[in-house]
Image: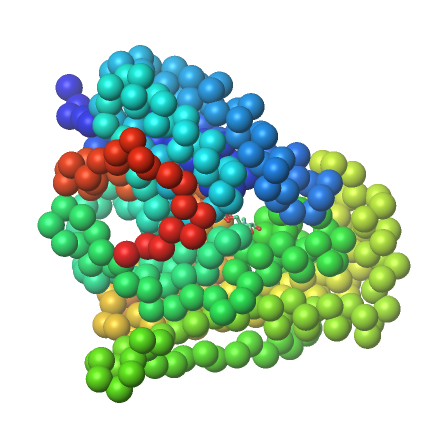
Length: 379
Ligand code: KG4
Ligand code: ZN
C-alpha cells in the first residue's frame, strides 16, 4: 500500500475555491477547482466581496467532492493544509476558518501554507509524479500571476525550504498587465488566456515596446552587506504604452463594439470577427514584449546566481509564448526549466497540499491562533 500522509489542501486566496488530496507531496489523488470567473466577468476583474461570498458558498461542496474523488473519508486524512496568505483578506479568511474548524472537529494537525510557496511546489509535485526526485539547488523560481511577479532563490534546509527574494515587480504584476490590457482593449476577463489565444493571429513585430531594465544592488545593502544584485520588473509602463497606442490609432469604436457584442461566453470566432488586424498585431506585440522581458530578466538572474534549475509557475506560466521562450533560452544556457501543467499553473489546492508535506515532516503545525495574512511574506 502507498505510504502517506494523505493531506487535504484548501485554497481560497483569490477567485478560485479549491480542495485537493495529495499523498506525501508526490501523488495527486484528487483536485477540485470551482472557478469564479463567471461571477467576476461582468466587472472586468475580481470583486473582493463577491469572491468571499462565492468561497462561502463553494467551500463545503468542493471539499466534499475532493474527498469523494480521493475515495477516502475525512477520518482517513492525515492532516489539513490551508493557504494562510498572501491574497484577499476576506477570501483567505473563509478557507482559514473552515480548515481550522475541520481540523479541530477531526482532531487532525493543520498546516499553514504560503500561496507563493504553493505555486512553486505545483511544479515539484508533478516532477515527482514523473519520477524526477532530483533537483539541483539552489533553484530559481519565477512566480508570475495576477498578484505576483517574484523571483525566489530556493535552497533546502533539512526537510524544509528557504527562500530569498531576488526580484519583484515595482508596480503591476505580469498577470495584472495581461488583464488590464485585455480590459482596455474590450476583450474581457481574465486577460491572459484571451491574449494568449489571439496573439497567434497577429504580428508580434508590428508594435515596438521598450521595457525597462531594473537591475540594482540589494535594497538592504548599506555598504557593509555582500552585494547581491536584484532583478526587478515593471509592467505599468507597457499598459500605458498600449493605452497611448489605442488613443493615437483611433481604436475606440472597435473597443466599444467588442464591449457591446462579446457576450458572456465568446468563442474564438467571436473574438476574431470583432478584432481587426491592428488590434491583433497590438495584442501579439504586447505578449511578445511581456514574454521577452520575463524570460530575459529571469535568465539574467539565473546566470548571476549560478542556478542550473528554473521553475516557472503561477497563472502566467500557462502562456504558450512564455513557455516556448523559456525553453529556447534555457536550452541555450544549458539550464533545466520546469513548468507545471496548465491545470496546476493557475490557483489550485493540490499545490497547497503538496507544499505542506515538508512542514508535515518537520512537524511544523499551526495552532488555534492561526489567522489569514493578506501580505504574508515568503521566507
Ligand atoms: O495564479 P493565478 O491563477 O492567480 C493568482 O494568484 O493571481 O493567476 C491568474 C493570472 C491572471 O492574471 C491571468 O490573466 C493570468 O494568470 N493567466 C495568463 C494565462 N492564463 C492565466 N496570463 C498569460 N497567459 C495565459 N495563458
Ligand atoms: Zn496564485
